[in-house]
Length: 147
Image (cartoon, rainbow, N blue to C red; front, side):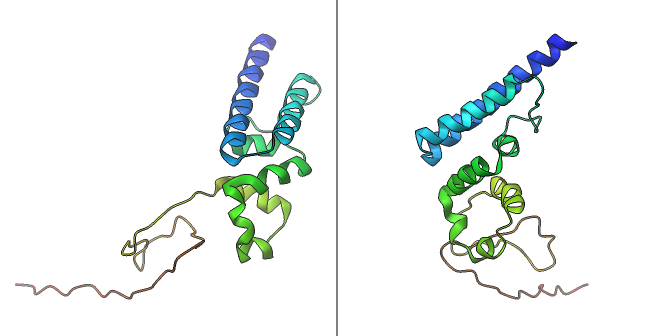
């Protein structure tokens, strides 16, 4: 049982290190920062009295395992730091909130005529407009003649 737990921890550690390496490459994280974070994760893993907080190897799981300073360093690089230019994140800059939300953000591009929501739809996402504009049109349903 202990061997299985050790094997699971090794797989988890490797997943986190792969997530970190991919992120470092795509975000242009400074090599020195990458090394600090990697060393912290490896040390935390090797210390048998401490456990990795998150039980998944995703980037979100990696962020959960980092102390506040390293977490902030990583979050500042996510999405090329575009979130820092948005008023919403300047107003709501609680570190725990930022640590939860930033890793879940994604990037979408829409053509000019794309309909994102129709009135009455359940909104399952929030959009932050980084560039461009959004319009609102109240479209009324077409009345069909009934026989």
